Length: 299
Image (cartoon, rainbow, N blue to C red; front, side):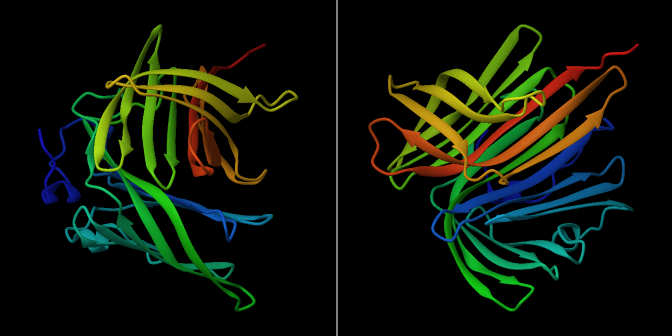
């Protein structure tokens, strides 16, 4: 199934309570030291919208979360705004605007595509029915509480997914890596002893599917066992191979979210990252993300 501009709108949901449609964006501007991710998750059968905005600058970070419980509006622009965080579609599959209004950080961003959207396919993961991703260029301004205005000019990624959402699998790893001449988007979902890798390598105008992934997760020292980096070897279906070393952009460029499922807890780590790739000039930027399910210890 090919993508069309209609896929920017909400899809007709199934009757499953866990049906979720999500819009997600991130970017890193290494020169200014600003990085960010933002998302909205729409759950029509539960009449819930989740808004998340996280921005990191120097030693500061702001994590905004708002869950709205009400009937889902009809108009898309109204759906995608809670009055403080707003996503606005300008040109389907090409351009979005993102606004965040807060006394500490006020942000006005324009997200423009670097390539056509890349379809991860039906059933390409355990957490959606359909999913696509798209690398982009992000420009805009951030205003601080003291009136300082900082220009933003960075690279980033967006994705959109829809379908029944299972947050309680054994785990997943996802990565976005933006280089001037290359973009990589991937994820690996693990359920029991089975792992499924999906994603792409974009070099110039050529899109290559990822066929396999080797992953070594680097954990923080101490008892918290937080993932703080990754070593990956990424194999393209055309025989290409990329070896990356990824680490946090700065110690504070991370966010952790937890969900309690009774006997176990899932921990989601979203981390803005710097990537080094052997054979490529310059550093890349982007995201490394883990979902980790931990069994509780009782008694």
